[in-house]
Image (cartoon, one colour):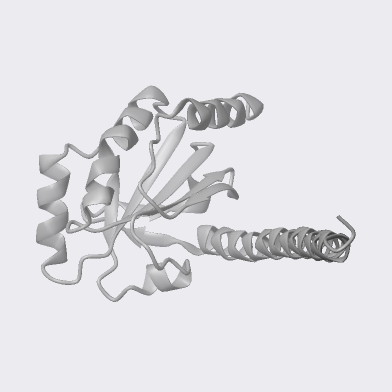
Length: 185
């Protein structure tokens, strides 16, 4: 036992140091992630106040003048299977919260964009309008690097950002939206 004692003590010290480093670094990562989110959200809120554009149907959209308390800006492309997949729950959300949720699609197709948008709008009976972002300028101004991505606003303030396929009808999300809508009354 005596000859293993130094090895046991050394192992214990190593374990304590390792665990403490993980805790300290984990806190730094969490703090830096929070700062990055704050920066990202500030960019999104700035873009919200600036975004005025005609949709593919010719309707002029100005996000800051919308009456709906919840606005979702959804970045998508016709070739993006996860984008297409989330349209079902996005349409259901719009129907559930009629006149409370406004969705603006920002399409990122580069080839025959208008034709692709029209085809998807008809095929999936999209309940929202889209704008074409052929040059990628909207995606760049929102720092969007993955599709699908969605920025969810309540009265112009970001309440959620997702950059993967998302279930807009999940209980947790419906609860968040309901709470925000009810707080707007």
